[in-house]
Every structure is written in C-alpha cells, then in structure tokens.
Image 1 (cartoon, rainbow, N blue to C red):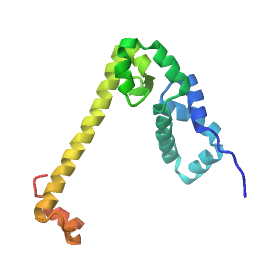
Image 2 (image 1 turned 180 degrees about the vertical axis):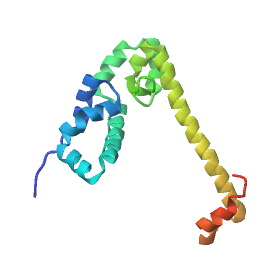
Image 3 (image 1 turned 90 degrees about the vertical axis):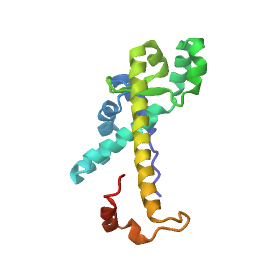
Image 4 (image 1 turned 180 degrees about the horizontal axis):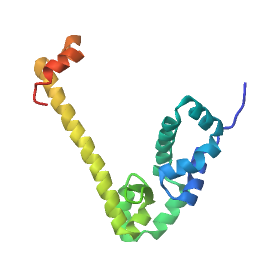
Length: 173
C-alpha cells in the first residue's frame, strides 16, 4: 500500500491569500501549478484545465468561508464591542465583495462601510435569486399537482416525460 501524505490545502490557500489577497481565482492561479503539478499537466493534456480550475476555485471559496484561527482572534479584537451581538450572529467570518473580486473579513467590512454595503447587496441578490428559483419551482409543482389531483399518489411516468412537458409548456408557469 502506497502511503502518501495529503498536503494541507487550507494552508496553501491561506499562504496564497496573504500574497495575492482573498480572491479565489487569484489564489488558484497562484497555487494550482505549484501544489498540483501532475494534476495540472494531466488536465491540460486531457482538455480539463477549465474544469480543474473551476473546482479548485470552489474549494478555495469553501476554505475562505471557514474560520481561520488567526483571523478570528484579530478580527474580534478589532470589532467595536457594540457590534459584537450582530457579528456573532453572522454565519461566516468573511464575505465576498464583488467590486474587489475578493473575500473580506467582517472586521475589514466594518472598517469600510462601502465594502460592507457591497457584500450585503451581493449576498442579498444571491438570496433573491434563490427565492425567485424557488417560486418558479413552486409554480411548476402546482402545475404538476394540478394534473394529478391526489398529491399522495405518485405521478405516472408519462406526466414526467419530456414530450408531455412540451405539451404542458402552455400552462402559465
């Protein structure tokens, strides 16, 4: 059995963030080839470079959204005590600021209200996108259930078929 120690990806992310800022794409560009040279080469040969980079960006964002021990102590020390009840209710230690294309800690957002406003608006727009999609699914669900009066009975396969979906497209969804 081959024993290979997996590198601590989070450590690479935080080291790169110290160099290039908390922008997930910039972090990936900084570390991808250095951390995963064989994978990067193989992805290039197989035409999967974009997929690899996209997946790594997603993973970097996950790391950036998780608390970093050093950040939490420094950030909380910098936050005005009157804000602490609000800060403690937040689910993440940092938030994305679109015009900077990077994550900023809550303390940094408090220090710069225009960045806090941008992060607030961005996350609200994501929430509104989710609610709008939920509304569309609600309408689709109601259209499907309207065809099958007894909601406890499973829908026949024909109701879920693509051909029938085309016929149902005339239903106001």
